[in-house]
Every structure is written in C-alpha cells, then in structure tokens.
Image 1 (cartoon, rainbow, N blue to C red):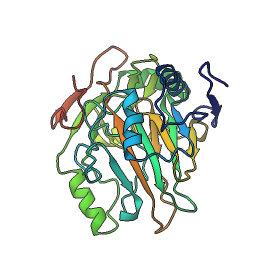
Image 2 (image 1 turned 90 degrees about the vertical axis):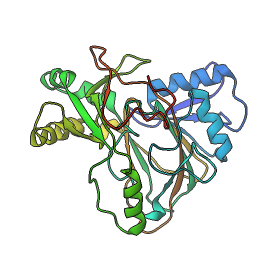
Image 3 (image 1 turned 90 degrees about the horizontal axis):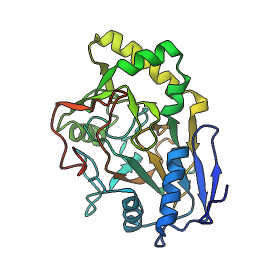
Length: 299
C-alpha cells in the first residue's frame, strides 16, 4: 500500500512484517512520515528498511524519533564512545539463538528496538521475529483464560547456554554482574493499541505461585504458540539494512547457522513503560532495582 505521505508499505509475512520503501532514513523526516511509520509499526510489528547505510549517528537520530533512548544495556558494555549503542557481535561467540524479548528482566523493558546490519555473513545470520499478539489469539479459550491470570518472573541470571569460549564466558559474567528478577504479566496489554500479547520469552523462567516443574511446562506450552511458523517473519540481512520492531509485542531469535563467520549488528533501543496486565496491574521488581541507569522511562 502507498501511504498519504508517499512511501510504500509492502507486507513480507502473513501475520507480521513489512518492508518500507521510499524513505531515506539519513534525511530529516517530516513528522507526518514518522507518524505513518509508527502506525505501520503498530500494525505490522516489525519493519525492514533496506539499503539505508546509516552510521551510528544516523541510527541514533532515527531511533530517537520514537521516544527517549535507553543506554546500551543494563549490564553489557556499549560500543566505545557510544553509550546508547549495543554491539551484537557473533564473532565473539556471543549469539542470541534463543527466543526472547529485549531486556524483559527489568521493570521497564524497551518500547522498540532498532538493529542495523554492518557485517553480514554470505549465508545464514538471519533474524526471526514473532508476533506475540497472534500467538495469544491462537490460544484455545481455556489456555487464554489461564494466561490472563498468570504472572511470570523474568531474570537475566539463568543458564541458557554454556559459553563456547573465554570471550563468551566473560560476556556471561558481565551479563549477570548485576542481577535482576522482575514479575511481569504473562498477558501484556499494549499501551498504544490495547492488543493483548503473550509477554514471555527466554528471560521468563518461572510462573508466580507454581513449582519450577509446572512453570517450565506451562511456559513451554505458551511459548510454542509464539513460535508457530505462521507467526514468524524471517529477515535476511544485507549490509546497510535497518530493522525496527515493537519490543512490547514481539519476540526474536538469531539462528546460529553461519559457522565461524563474522556477523555484526548495532542495536539502539527506545525506552519503554511499565507493562500492565489485563486488570491494569503493573509489573514490579523482585530483585535488583528499577535500572534507572538503563532506562529514563522508569515509573
């Protein structure tokens, strides 16, 4: 479809994902264009901008159009001299090959994430993004009613993969150097659209009030709906691409399928609000703090 401001939106997945054509992100964008991009983000949840070739400053400028920016990460160092940019460097053996929503272990996870392709392997290295609202709608009614009542504890302190080398082990030590545990509703109400989505993913490690065994079983069932193939779009990168996704109602995964080839993305995240469940109850910290050093939007 063609928007009123002249750029095109081309769907690339049946339930999630669109490419934005005819927008130069290196230029100063008219507020009306930004509004339409945000509307497209709310509808499609993941947007791909091809061949933009932004530098760090351009990525920061674009991301800031959607709100105040976080620092790079609550515990992991930023790109040198760029406190708001996180290097996503597969060459160090640090690969996010598990389904997750960014930084849900703090009380105010990011609103949106931008990823910029810098070094892309000749094969593999895609990013998969899943629609958590479609997953919620797919649940049979008894499971939806159960999910509506549940809360999950999200934490950065769990063993999701054994480090492959010393660099990865050091990254792991930094990742858990400050420990967080936060209770979020399993069903989050999107603050702009009112849509309900399954707010779980890799950092969700237990269900409040249930045993570890029961928690694992329930989370596995709910997660299986998020990662159904029809709810996923696969983004094949080329250098210079930029992807913007709504972190409040998606999960993503980077398959570790490119051997020892280098892969480097830069991530910039937009600060988010405190998640709310269907009854309006807000997420709360169990261990750690409000991560005010990471997100200025803590409430």
